[in-house]
Image (cartoon, rainbow, N blue to C red; front, top):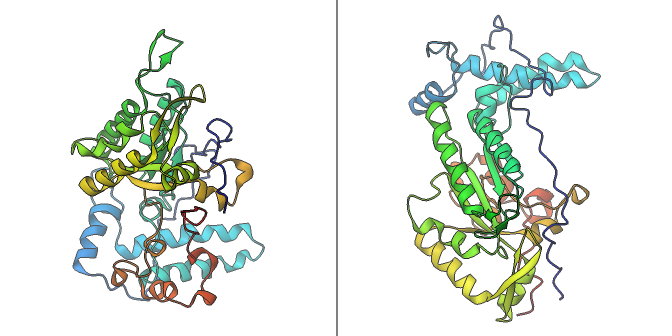
Length: 363
C-alpha cells in the first residue's frame, strides 16, 4: 500500500492559540460567593496523604499563606463554578442540581478534574486548562512571544507543548543581522530556563514537550540532548516521524534533511543511521520519544485549521494505545478500567486504538 506523502514544511496553516490565562476580557471572572456552604452529604473520606496534598497544593490561601478553605469547600467552589455553564442553556433552573451533582461526583472521588481546575475554579485567575501548545516560528519576535506565554501558562498551573521544527538550523545565515543563527536547541534552553525560574514561586512546577521533525538539519543534536543529564530537565522530548522517513527506513535508503527557512534540501542521511541513534538514546536515557505526525494528521478532526505539529506534555499516546495490557490499572478508577477492557464492539470511538504507523509500509 502506498504511503501518504509527508506534510510540507511551510504550507501548513497554524492557528495562534487563545490565552484565557491572563485575558480578562476573553473570559468573565466568576467568583464563588463566600457565603455558599458545601452540602452536608456525601461525607468526604480522604486519606491522610490526600489531605497533605490538598493542603500543600490546592486549598485556597490568604495573603499571608494561611489556608482559608476546607476540602469540602474546595469541592463546592469547583462544583458551583463549573455548573455556571448551565446558564448557557434554556433550563437555567437546573443550575443548583448541576452543582450538587458535580459536588457529589468529586466528594465520592468518582471523578476529579485536573489540577488547574481545582486550583483556579471560582477564583480570580479562572484558568481551568492544563494543556497548551504554543507556536514557535522562525523569528525572535515569535520565540519571545511564546516564551512570555509559556511563563504565564506555567504560573497558572498549565503545561506547554512546543514544536521547534520551523526554526532555522544552527549556523544558518541570519540575513537581518548578517550573522549566523543559533538553531532550535539554543532557544529550547531559554524555555527550559524560564520553567526553572517560574517553578520557584508556584504550587505546581511547569513542564514542556519539545518536538523536532526527523527531517530537520539539527536532528542528530536533538536526539543526543538527554545524553547530558543536566540538559532540558524541564522537557519531554519527541522526534516528529514522517511516513517518508519510515519508508526510507523500511527500504534501507537515505532521506532528505530540509532547511525550514529555505525549504531546500541540505543533505541526505541513511534512515537506518538515524533510527539507530534514536534507539540508542531511548535505551540510555528514555528519550526522545516518537510522535508520528502523518498518522496523527490522517485522524486530524479539524484539518481545515491546519496540520497538527505538536502535542502537550501529558503524553503522545495513552498507555492503552501502546499495549493490550494497560499499565498500572489498579491506579485508575474502576469505571474507567472497566471501559478500557470492554469488548471492542461496545467501546466508544475515542478508546479505539489509532491505526499503526507501520500499517502503510511495505516491508
